[in-house]
Length: 133
Length: 139
Image (tube, rainbow over all chains, first blue to last red; front, side):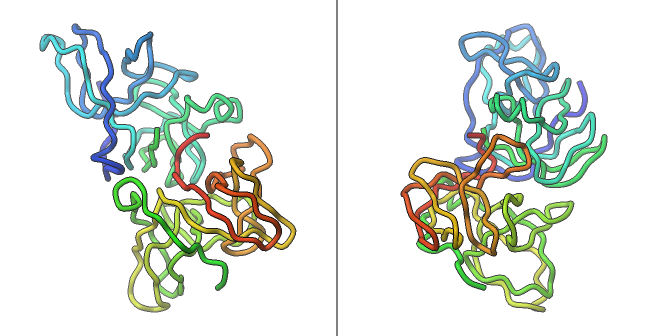
């Protein structure tokens, strides 16, 4: 994979990690943007616009480690990759695999799509985002 | 300045402070409501309605003290002041008001209508009431 988040600052209680279920046979790099995939509390690496953000993978998971539970950080400042323009101060949403972009009004109405608030202006590079799930 | 936030009760990990950049020549009192003014992570005191609120000044900064990084509190309870023609209602969202450090009701779901926090009490024009602040939380 590529474009995983780089954690800058853990906020809350060590980043307020939440435990989620993941598929045993999948490899998940540390820093992956995770989205909800199925009930209950099951997450996968982000795929596309319109998905519900769960958190940032706190550790690496290999495909053969048998692990089915993973901690995801829900409160931190992290450097994330933009697929399109990111605006200073504006809420950001998932736009693809480990990428984000400016949220729109529909996203804000469906607030669980929001990844965090952009702390800098970015185009297709990386930028700091305040995440508070 | 006037109307800085007072009676700040830190939540999370000591208020979940984040570091932001400010101008060296700016004098910024403790408790000032701060907004993102330019990229990257650069802030000034709030000065108008619906600005990009990012937190509350944790400590005072004097002008020309050589300091360009300050900590802002992003998770707390704080007493804030409504504008001259504004009020806040228990349980409703507030955004930055027309003047520095003031707040007013958030009036729409627009992206460009940034939330300061949730009013914990109902107060009228020029009144001061407690607001729950958790920057980045989507309500």
